[in-house]
Amino acid sequence: MDFQWDAEQRAFRDTVRRFLAENLPANWESLAHGPGSASQSAFSKTFCRALAKAGLLVPHWPRRWGGRDADAWTSFILAEEMWMAGEPRGGQYMNVNWIGPTLMRYGTEAQQNRYIPPIARGETIWCQGFSEPEAGSDLASLRTRAERDGNGYRINGQKIWTSYASHADTCFLLARTGIGKAGMSVFLVPMETRGITVRQIPSVIGEGDIHEVFFDDVFVPADALLGAEGQAWEIARHALSLERVGIPRFALAARILRRAVAALKSAGRYAHGAIEQSARALAACEAARLYSYQIVDQRRHGTPTGPEASAARYATVMAERLVGEFVVEHCPEALAGGDPLLLAHHQRAIVAGIASGAAEIQLNLIATELLRLPREPR
Image (cartoon, rainbow, N blue to C red; front, side, top):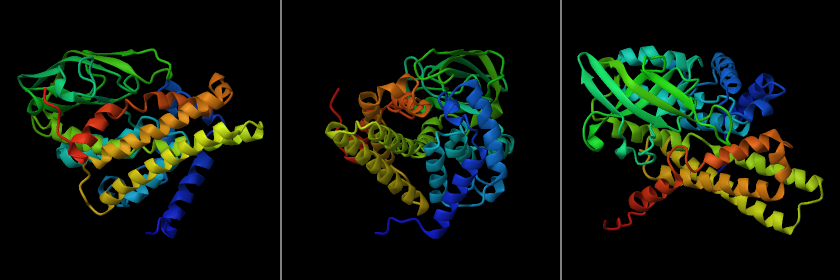
C-alpha cells in the first residue's frame, strides 16, 4: 500500500501552508491561546473571509454552494493544516465540517439558501445545542421541549457546555417534540431570538469557550424545523459522524510533541524517561492519524461511515492525552506562560475526551457496534 500523497495533494498542502504563512499575524500563537475568546472569534471571521476568497474554506463542497467538488482527502488535508497551526478558523470549523453538509442533506431549499452561502463566505458562527445538565452524551435523555404553537413552536429548556454560544449567530438545536429517540427534532434558531439567555461558564480552558444557554418561551416559526419532526436522531448521528473525524486534533498534538522534544533537547533534558514517554505519545498520534485516514478513505469511495468513526475519535483522544501528559511532566514551565501554543494545546487536551461525545460513550459504541459485544443486562 502506498501511503504517500500524490503530486496534486502535495501541491494543495503547500498552497494551504503558504496561505497560513501570509495570513496569520505575528501574535497568532497568543490569539490561539483563547480558542473561544471574543478576540479569537473576531479574528476567525476575518481569517475565514480571506480563506473563502482564496477558495480554501470549503473546497470539498459542491460548486453550487461555493466549493469546487474536491474530494474528502482535500478536506482532510485542509483540516490537518488548520489544526497543526492552532485552528485559526475557530468555531467555523463546525460550519465547514458538518453544519453545512448536514444542511445540504436535510435542509429545505429555503433553509439552504438562507444559511449555506454565509457559511461558504466565512461570515457566520454557529453553536451546537446538544448537551444538557441531565443529558450530556446521552442525548436521548434531553428535556428541552419544543411544543407546537400555531404556526410555530415554543421552546423551553437549557443547554450546557455550548461552545461559542456568546459569539454565535445561529444554534443547531436539539429539542424534544415527543417521547424517546423518535421524539426529538432539530431546529435552526437565530441566537438573537427573544427569550434566549447566554451565560459564560468560567473555566481553566479559557475565556468564552463554554456556556449555558437558556430558552425561555422562545418562539420559532415552523420553517425553523430541520427535516421532519422526530428525525433528530438520524440527523444528529449523521452530523456527529462528520464531526468526530473532521477534527484532526492529532495533527496539533504531534506538532506540540515535536516542539516540546526540541525544547528539551535544547536544554539538555531529553533523557531516557522522556524519550520513552515521547515515543508512546508519537505512536498514539500516528495511530490516530491512520484510524482517521481509514474513515476519510471510506468517504472518498462513498462507503457509509459506521462505528469506525468512534474508534478514530477515541484514538485521537488518547493521542491528545498522552501528549498533554508528556508536556505536564517534562515541560511544566510552558504551562506557566513560557509557551502560549503549548498552553493552548494543554487547554484543548483537557476537553478532548468530552467534546464531540465523551470518550466513554465512544468506548460503548465501539463495544456494541464495532466489536458487537453483548450489552450487560439491566
